[in-house]
Length: 213
Image (cartoon, rainbow, N blue to C red; front, side, top):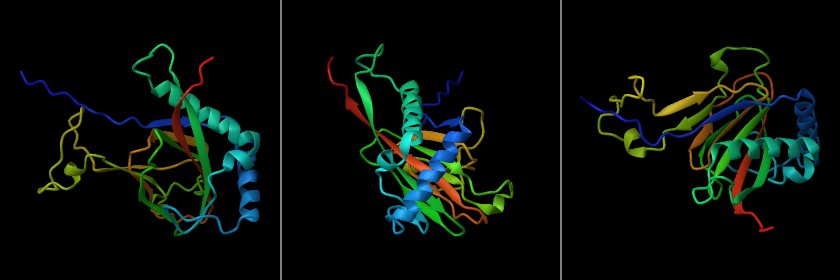
């Protein structure tokens, strides 16, 4: 009898921010920083505004609460192989804000030097419109590059349910959603065509050994 095993799965975690007041405070902090630093920086973004990576300094208590949420998610999804009952590692966070309008996007990229990366959506920008033509999806690329570049690209491997494996996965954001994935996973944002403003916060979590007591 054939024994087929699905190996090397990639975790992708979805959760929800519970505090509407916290989301509003994050928006207020981002708007204030955008007024202070109108130029921002350019990294993977195609258009839009990308803040510096020091949001923990200027984001107030809401940013600290968001980081705590991300670190809690990371702790739940990670185990220290040499100390499974109590991890020897903590997290050093960095975070920044992105503000996108019609036509803006992010090219495929990874976050080298981090272990987990997360994105929290302060405003999805869709303004309640479910039209898929609005774009703006978070796009995830299968990390197994040989699968993408096979000589017969129309052939697909079957997944655990027998369905063909995609080479890309699209996630449509919604306001209050927070997602987390390994930092080596290539990801992008499809061009956004909504009339609203997309506001999101990206978080990197860098592992570091805890100081001994």
